[in-house]
Each structure stands twice: as structure tokens, then as C-alpha cells.
Length: 340
Ligand code: KG4
Ligand code: ZN
Image (tube, rainbow, N blue to C red; front, side, top):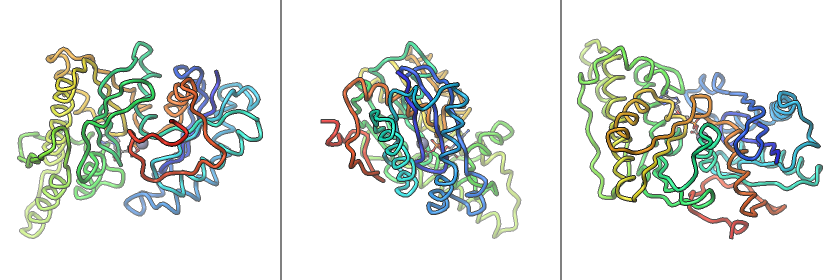
């Protein structure tokens, strides 16, 4: 089954052709990062406008690279939430139009379920159940994936997402948006023991909090500025990354053990972080857990992951009603009326 998948939930206009959930024939991503970088973060109105300008060419390129035509597609899939409402609407309406014109089903996909499914592409042997650590610019979740289409939230951030904390800390160190990758590149050059950042104390198990860490970096930089002291930013990057990745990896492994999962799957933009990947590799080896990580190319937003999840949604009988709307905020565990 060939699926043409579309993703426009944030600042990437993406389209892919995916066969039977696991084989990617093309995966085109048009990033808007440079333009949003001018403003220090994603500007929703600009994101929507760029999606409108790009989506047609991006989809045409995805079909051309796959060597297939629209008529070869068996279904169209699209991210309908969560995300920026204006941005989501561009992809959703474009996908609706295509599905209608082709007379083929439209498959609605939850963005976070797509991130998790990126691992089905990379790891043919991976099947649910497993525990998933979803770490992106907007989400930090521990999710128990009980089947391809059933998700239980085990824990989540009570304030900032991990990627948001990386980006805000990076901004204090003088890096452009999105700064996570800059911290990652700088960290190996610094001393990870140079600064001790606070470990958040939370009442709820398996939840996260990153806003205190972000504020600690801000205070460190501001105090040094006021005193006219110079700071070794590579030491801050190393110490900050050490703390965030330690929290993420120990919490994820603890959640696996508490919930009887022998497999941990990570995904989302922050799953590209080299410190997190190293820590989890050694911790999972020690704890005898199977660890699956997407290749770097499938960590960030893309449409191949949407096409992968769409296949399993369709197998379950899930298709979109004609009046499907985009949803800005949507817990992964919530069942939409068309999923009942
Ligand atoms: O999944 P994603 O592309 O978009 C969302 O759905 O949010 O994640 C983007 C986030 C940004 O905060 C970015 O700074 C972060 O992922 N990120 C990283 C790295 N690469 C991307 N954070 C830390 N280390 C990295 N190597
Ligand atoms: Zn994402």
C-alpha cells in the first residue's frame, strides 16, 4: 500500500511516499528554520504562509523522487494535530483536496504517534509493546505503546519541553534558534562537572521539569555579565547537557522497569542529541533493555514518520471524516470520535 504523507505542524513543510508503513520511497523536507531564526523562534503566521507557498512543490518532488504518480497512491495521510493551528490547516486542507480528487481515503495522524513510528522505518524488527521517550521542541513524554494504535501517557513535563530548555539555554549562550544542536556540538569540548545544575523534585513519578534548569543557566550568565566575569560557555553547555540527558535517561529506564517493558524507543528532535544517545546506550546495556533510536535524519519533523504511522491507523480501520478539523492541543492518549 502506497501512502502519500504530509506534515506541516510546525516549521517544516514535508511530504513523503511510504509503502506498507516501513519502506520509504521519498522523504522531502523544506525547512523554514533560517527565516524563523531571525526572530529567535517560530513565528506561526510566517510558518503558515511558507507552508502555503511550498506544499505543492514539496509534494510534487516527493512523487518525482519516488518515481510514482498521484494515481499510484492508495491513500493520503496528514498530521491533523497537535501543532500550530494555521500551519496544520495548510497540510490538512491540501491533503483533503488530494484525497477527494483521487477518490482515495484520507488517514489522520497524530504528530507524536508519527515521531514514535519513525522507528518502525529504521528498525524492521520493532513491534509494540514498548516504552517510548518522546523528546522534541514541544513535547517531553514517556508513553507506553501497547499496540500500533494504543498509547498510554506514563509521564510528561510539567513546564518546558526538553528541546525548549535546550533552545532557551543555547540562546543565553549566544546561539541562534534552534540551539539544541549547538549545545550538542559544544558540549564535548567542555567539562561536564564544571557546574552543578539543580535536579528538579517532582511529586509525580516519571514526570519532568526543565524550566528551573533553563533559569539556572540564565542566572549564571546574567551574574557573570554583571560582575564582568567571562564564562567558559563550553563548560556550561557540557554541564547543562549532562544534567538534562541524565534526567531523561534515568527516568526513561525507571519507567521501563516500573511498567514491565523490556524495550525503550526514543524519538523527536532531542533524540538526535549525542549525549542522550550515549547515556541511554550504556544504561540500557547495563539494565538489559533493548534500545531503539531513529537515525538522525528521522529524529526531527518529517513526513515519512507520518506515512509509517498512517499505515497502522489504516489497518485498524481509521480514516478521516470529511469535516475533520486540525487540533492544536491533543493528548496522545485521547481517542478522537473517528477512532472509536
Ligand atoms: O521534533 P522536532 O524537530 O520538532 C518538534 O516537534 O518540536 O524537535 C525540535 C527540537 C528543537 O528544540 C531542537 O533544538 C531540538 O529538537 N534538537 C536538539 C538536537 N537536535 C534538535 N536538541 C539537543 N541536541 C540535538 N542534537
Ligand atoms: Zn515534532
